[in-house]
Length: 346
Image (tube, rainbow, N blue to C red; front, side, top):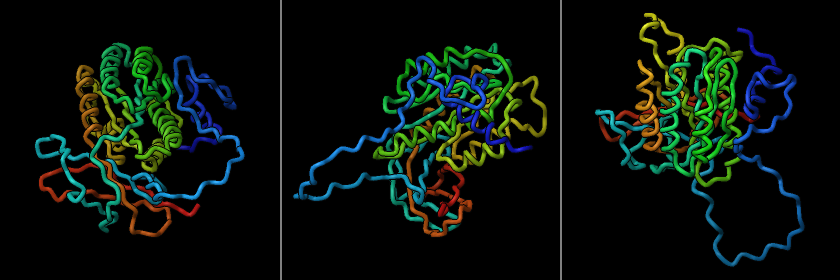
């Protein structure tokens, strides 16, 4: 597959701040957010002003925040389940073991509390969804209502084009309104939608970099078929996902009548995106199962641990490093992203 030109990639990025890829002029120009959107403001440098000399410190130096993400710090969101499939939420720091390329690492950050999340919901509204859309909207709305006041989310609709129906906000009413405005039609540009969502998450994370604890990032991707319209190659989307700090949860609605036996490319794509990033893939047979699936994802996101470590490997070669997290408590299954790309000097 030919790699997209720089102009095409710029068009995709521009779509994230406007209503639709199809509505963007070429070359792209800045577009104001659609009505009802509440974009996260970009950082604006303050005007310099003269300041008096700082007084001499008479007390102890304030402690730095407990955690700061950085290029050399590896952050992991870890899900732990027992043999019955129940989430385990009472593990202590010394019950975790982290290995990078087989070398045990020293955990320098740990918390079992639920840190705020920045989450993008990607909703397939292609023509095949016409009769299923109301049930999807109900399930997605129920999920939004479980978000905490400190969480931010966005709603991204995709068919032949990608539309940011609601920019990142903590306003649940605005998110619900955006979900109810979905309309079915067109083909399925799944790869384009994931690409746009990952770029949007990166921007919102940068605006919140000063927060004391890292904001978890996640995508929840729903689709009822394989990609038929994207210009972004899947291989590039997968690499972008692996380079991000984003867990991808995928929901692939099966068609019991039309499903063919053997290799299913749509399910392979959704499963690989989830496995590589520490998320989870779901393949319900009926649209009526969506409420349960979205509920399971909400339960998982509220049950995760956050770990951080500085790699003992000093090489800055950009190579892929495999990560494994284990527990000293027996009979538990732990899930996190499979690895990360090492930093470079560039």
